[in-house]
Amino acid sequence: HVQLDESGGGSVQAGGSLRLSCAASGDTSSAVFRAWFRQAPGKSREGVAAVNIEGGNTFYADGVKGRFTISRDKDKSTVYLQMNSLMPDDTAMYYCAARPPLGGNWDDMKWFVYWGQGTQVSVSS
View 1: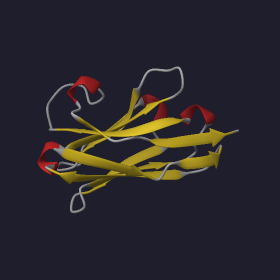
View 2: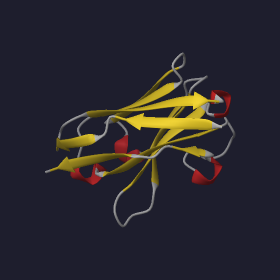
View 3: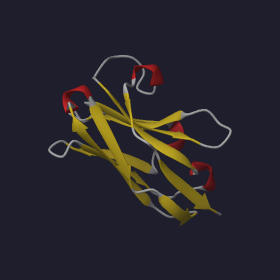
View 4: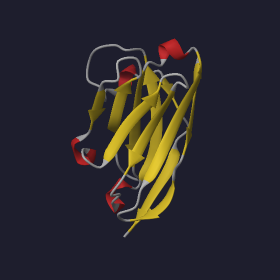
């Protein structure tokens, strides 16, 4: 079993920055592929970014490329999401998710076994 603990959400004005963290505990060998998803009120959950903690490969949704950066600390089994140039459309609950390093699309939610509780990000105009 893996537990994911997220932190770092908050409220900022448009153009501001936030950094989210996702720390894993337990059987972290099952949580090598880590992703951030988000869900805004009334909308479907969508992939934001992902990283393979071992290899370092990263993946991004088109709407966040150039603004968000996902990184990892292998020793701490922690993943970070640096969010810059935030916009009101980025307002959502952000969830960390983890799975073994399978193939397939990086943002295919059905393969993610472990999910965090979520952290709220609110961006005002």
